[in-house]
Image (tube, rainbow, N blue to C red; front, top):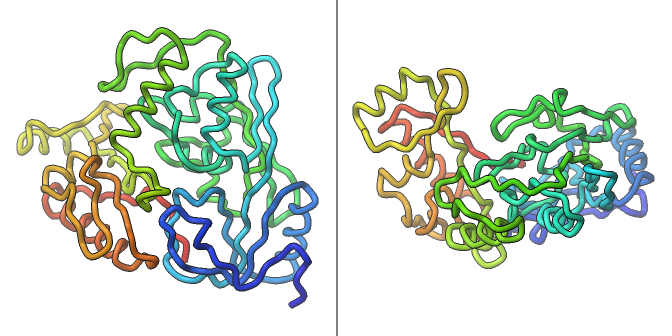
Length: 328
């Protein structure tokens, strides 16, 4: 197999994942521009390989060395047109939040401080403190690595749902940029219970969000983690009523017609698992959804997470789902 000059072989992924897992990939390439997109497409067409697309690596768990090609999405660029903001997939998410405020466009304040890149945001439909990126998406531009062409998805075509989108089901779509529809007028979203209800402006709202995050969520650069490890489970009204009869204090929120979202953090905390450790991994004392790992391997972390899932199922008859994506 003849490698293009830009490709690297036997590449360490240690600096490309927030858990600091010491795994490698057979091949690695950074995608920086349109020319790279077509180069990667042609290479994959000629060589039948497994491949994975990564951004900043803050929401992935490497299970082992990857046999195939890792594509680092590093497409940059931020621009504005009236109320619309276009951002390249390789930009850091929090940078575009600050950039929107610098340009007097509002809406993204509650999504401040979320680690990771712009490209991952529509895939995961990132959300926090009462906001989701799907609230603002106008369209998502992608490059189809199978067909070697650009494909644009309107908001409705993205099939957004809780921490999900069409892009999770079509991993051959590499997000190139997103377009967000923002507002020229600031309107504070203070629905989250811990947020102050009176806010002077968007920068104060951002400051409040960052303060809450710093108190609950450890910096992955100091304590290796992937943020929330489990999604909040969505259950039926009848199931919630049964749980309330056994656990009147359970934390739940109306989600959809006769559907309710249960706090996964509450479930874990109820079993006194917050702050527990197992070897070099454990659950944060500040937030029950944050699992940390000081090993450069993921075996113990995944084993402990599966153990927690099992205990939640046994005690509440609820099946938790991992939020980060596992690469293997």
